Length: 146
Image (cartoon, rainbow, N blue to C red; front, top):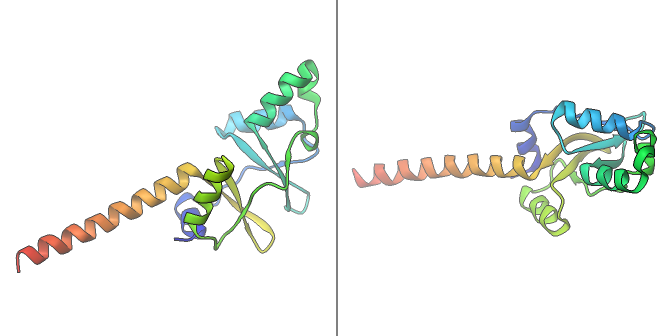
């Protein structure tokens, strides 16, 4: 199964933030959209980093009152782990597990086209397994009646 298949079932909705935005803006976007991280993009839409809840909490602890006025570019994770839209889901899951990350930006021809989370992959794999089980049960029960 390809990452493309996961994105088809999930949809193409992506919430991003610019590197010049403030951490307070990132917090607002995350709360409004009930998400735990944001891809950081430049004006042309190129991925330049990722900002996560963990990054924000660390900065709140370190900067205190200055936190809300901190630029995202000062806090974001540079060179985030990404995958290609045609990557194998099993490979991406292995990377997520090895690197202990919950979300991976998806790139197609250099452009951000989606985000894949552990939950998205599990949901897709569960649906595929359920469908395969249904087909196998149909085959077995059909074969018994022959």
